[in-house]
Image (cartoon, rainbow, N blue to C red; front, side, top):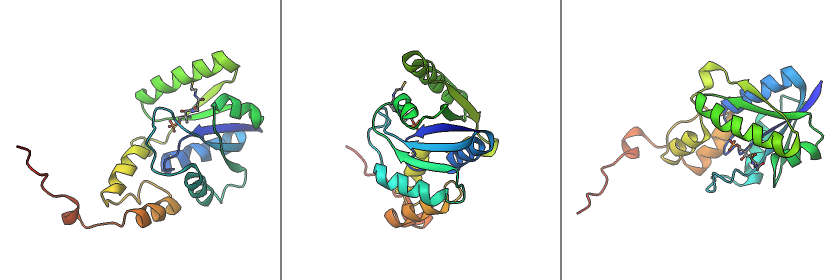
Length: 173
Ligand code: PNS
């Protein structure tokens, strides 16, 4: 039994993230979901507090999971919570490239190791970016996110019918 840190921006949490959390619980025992800022994604949709609230509401059936917000480096968060290592989910080859670079860098500067978990094949196309985009236009994301996230998004962006979602763009002269 180990304690592991699963860091991410979770803006918002989706079913692919839930899969990684469930796999981590089954494999390692105690999981700390570290809600962090990704400097490469400066324009977030939800505040850190809102993201934490949605995750807590979505994983209440998993008692060995804690949700904590961190500012700063993931490797410092690992040390602060005395986690054994970092866990990351991999969807595609593109994810692997980015994660491999981060894992090597994190290890080089701190000695903290990263373990990758492959996402369920059915969930590999889900991304927070596309969820934000679809929800903002009033589209239906209920098949991609847990219920608490779906209801938060529906409040923020009330669902609209197909016809009212798309309109001709103004012609530019
Ligand atoms: O869900 P994301 O956006 O892919 O998560 C990326 C995240 C937040 C885990 C990453 O940006 C991160 O670790 N941020 C904290 C700052 C840090 O440790 N940077 C060093 C990277 S080598």
